[in-house]
Image 1 (tube, rainbow, N blue to C red):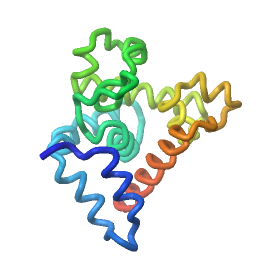
Image 2 (image 1 turned 45 degrees about the vertical axis):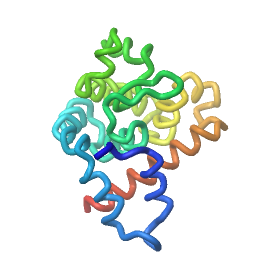
Image 3 (image 1 turned 90 degrees about the vertical axis):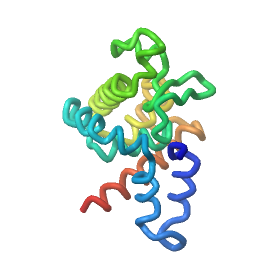
Image 4 (image 1 turned 180 degrees about the vertical axis):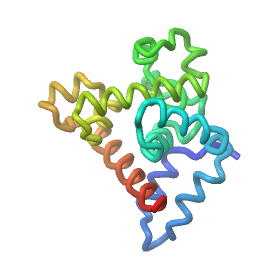
Amino acid sequence: MKPLRPVLLALLLAMGSAHASEWQWLAAFEVSPSYKALRPWMRDAAKAHGVDYDLIKAVIATESGFDPVAVSPKGAVGLMQLMPTTGERYGLKAREHLLDPRANLLAGTRYLADLIRLFDGNLSLALAAYNAGEGTVLRAGRQVPDIGETRHYVSTVMQLYQRLQAQAH
């Protein structure tokens, strides 16, 4: 079975509870072999860097659909879709390091934690920076920049994160 793709996640979110019960989108995670294999590492990364586990799950689902060898058209690599320059900032100097699921997960979570601190806990701004770069968010006056892809990304991750949190309680 192929890993869950971001498009499928967006579709499940858009369906809402009127067309799909809450278990359907959650079940999509559970059937992903990649997700199952990553759970312990996601929990370790969450604990190590003080980032909510459900937020990490939402970011990875949106970024790569839990595909550890995903490469975006813009060159972002791995589970958390790190750009090579960002990977280097966090000690991942070679492409094979970016493709190592555990290393990518730890570096991406650390980067996300740094962005959350930079933007004083504002998750929308941290996510916008994760997608578009922190410089872009700072140049936009510490607001989500007026970039359609970034606005959609923030909305998708936040909706998924909220659903995951609601499901946990």
